[in-house]
Image (cartoon, rainbow, N blue to C red; front, side, top):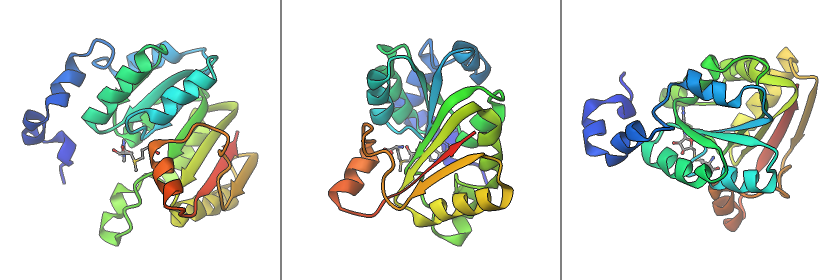
Length: 207
Ligand SMILES: C[S@@+](CC[C@H](N)C(=O)[O-])C[C@H]1O[C@@H](n2cnc3c(N)ncnc32)[C@H](O)[C@@H]1O
């Protein structure tokens, strides 16, 4: 089935499609984006939303250069606007495509926070947290790099731990029913879940 974000009708209705395509930094191919981050201390936020977390994270850690990846045009456009002053960028891409294209041993940090849960079985194909992602994460992180995961969704967290237990590609895993990143700037969704006092699940894989 053709994805909603790829249909001509959607593109005509959404003014941000054109804005993203005309933006000099956002119109480049992913391969050009990788050139920009090559040999730098770099962090990528997958499914970055409006870039709230990444912009604050880069202000806190100015030695990092950052990239936000997001499928929704309006959100990635807003991310780009926030990140420009920090020398960072937003890339409109599907996460699955991005990790498949990303060079190996490349990123110091990869973050995923609050991936959409897609709880219904028939929507399983939309789930971001899956075995192929685990393999790609291991491939694209630098040795010593880390994958940081935070969610309200226990199933994703359990799935990641189970995969690590069976495949064991990462030499170190830290996991907590709670928030390992409480001292880091909160993403927008984290703020919402904290306000509602809902449980969080977090995990770090270190390569
Ligand atoms: C629940 S929001 C969380 C946003 C942000 N990480 C936060 O914590 O506030 C999930 C985000 O991931 C994006 N997203 C979901 N699946 C994606 C995919 N396959 N590729 C790119 N972005 C995706 C959605 O558009 C949305 O902005």
